Structures are given as C-alpha cells and as structure tokens.
Length: 224
Image (cartoon, rainbow, N blue to C red; front, top):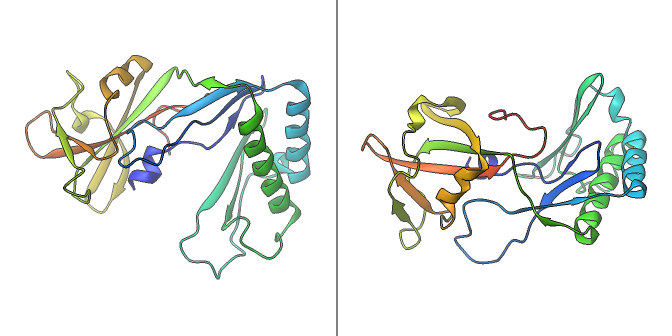
C-alpha cells in the first residue's frame, strides 16, 4: 500500500511539451521519503513522435479498456496510460506488459512502444529538478513492518494539521488512509525524512506513516 499510494506517474507529458520523469534513485536503504522527479522541455520532433505513437495505439477511441490476456504471471504490475483531449479522459491498462511472447493487440504493442520511447527520452532530454506547484501528503496509522534498526520516530511535522480531518483516500479493511494537498513549501518539513520515518500522531495517540510526493501537472489533489 505504501508503494501504491506514495508513488506517482512514471511519466507525464503535457500538450505544451513539458515532460516529467523519474529523477535519480540511489541504492541506499532507506531512501528518501519524497521521490525524485526531473522535468524537461520536449521539442517539436519529439512531440510529433509521441502523437504518432498515440495514434498507432488508437487511444483517442478508447474510453477505458484493460488487457489481462497474460494469465500465467503472478504478482506482475499493471501499466496504465491516461490521455486527455477535448472529449475527456481515455484510459488503457495492461497487466504484465512485455511478459507475453507477443502483444495481444496493436493497442498493447503501441503502448509498449510508447513506454520504450518515453524511457529513451528520459535519458536524453536536458532536464532539471522538477518544481511542483502542489504536494500530496497521505497519512495512515503505522501498523509496523519496518526493520527496527531502520525505523525512526519523529514528532508530527505539520503544525495545525490533523490527518484525521483530511479526505479519506483509500481504505483497507478498517484502516483508512487520508489525504491533503499543500503548496510546495511543505517539502521543507521532509528534507531529511526517509522511507522508514514514522511520526507521532498530533493527538498523541499512536503513530502515523506519511507518504509524500510532488503532484504532476494536471493531477487532482487527492485522486487515486
């Protein structure tokens, strides 16, 4: 759950060519709590190629479809593309993308080509550290699970805020994760925070795990 709620899109491309992609990731553990992103500006040729790949997928003709044709791979991830145009959002997802002997459809093949191209761009575009307008903070009751040697308990970092009052973001059984978005200045409170940092509840009752990440262009404050 922490991975699912604490990480955002791998890539975001706007109509104007703004490109957000993963930043540098080190092998240290525990890593930083706030994931790193870079951003760069795509040129006309790169945007033309992206549009060609989207057209090859036929994404503008899809409302919401899922390819689950691969059924012999356990615990694989699902890759998702969301495309916005004047008709609204178009969504396509594939379970275990790239693990089949051959793509099940032209749409899935085009999706794989698009992801490969975006990965290529992330290694060649002239990028710099991503500067978000908004930052999402998700809070859940800490249920244990971190190795004791790496667990660090800190005082609640957000004065005047109580996660019990935030919007319910996700529920697992009786456990609720709540969410609130802040402007980017909130990142100052998490400069030294690690993935295994937990916080005392502001009411003094229990401990809280926080998942903090920059929102990408166009993302809603609290929408999963």
